[in-house]
Length: 296
Image (cartoon, rainbow, N blue to C red):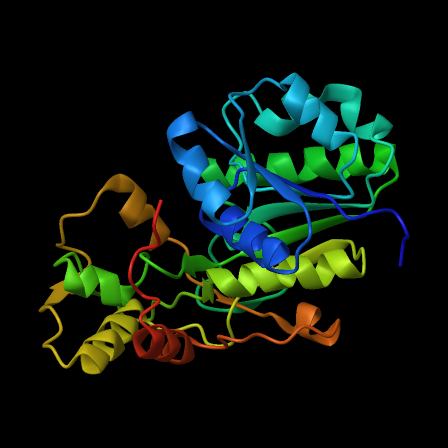
């Protein structure tokens, strides 16, 4: 382990980035993170994260913290013109004197459709959607930047993220839950707290590579809704046939990718998931009330 004082910096302290920041702050370690507006800065402060507004340009304050940063986490989606963080950093990454480890949060969407088959980190990436194509391009750009900077890079490919305020329990409570039926369709999921824990785990050992951060059980989406309804002791919404349901183009595109994603690699590295399937995740949130929306 390095004797350099720890400093984490999160580009994009949103749902996943903020969860990581909270976990770091709970260890009484310094963590800074960006948001897109001053209005959201207060919520980061409440979690122990020093906020910075990032609009695509590095501020002097961000520059100062980056010079002390040991752990850099990127949780901002790529744009049409490329990765906004890399665009802002330019060659800056290679001259950060204390940087020890970089993490880039990507998506299992980069694998595209595998007709329900299992995929691991060695599987062919054949993204379908524009957003997943951009993710692959961003992954490759970060690999090259990390190679030039001679720093370990962990790429975390995340499945469907749920957690406080973003889950089937919340959807049912707010009347937004839908029970779409598409035979043979399955999805993996991941609780946001397991994303945060995986970042801490990989960062502690400065481990690089590609890791699927996903639960153990790819399952049909209607099973999740039905299980949440059983916990709440309410009737699930009626079944809707996927083919005839009214869906946004983005929602429909998610159902065009059908695969089962393996998390064996990160487990073999020594990581243990707290929410290993959707039932455990929903059980815990229902029991402790954390399914409700976070403040801020």
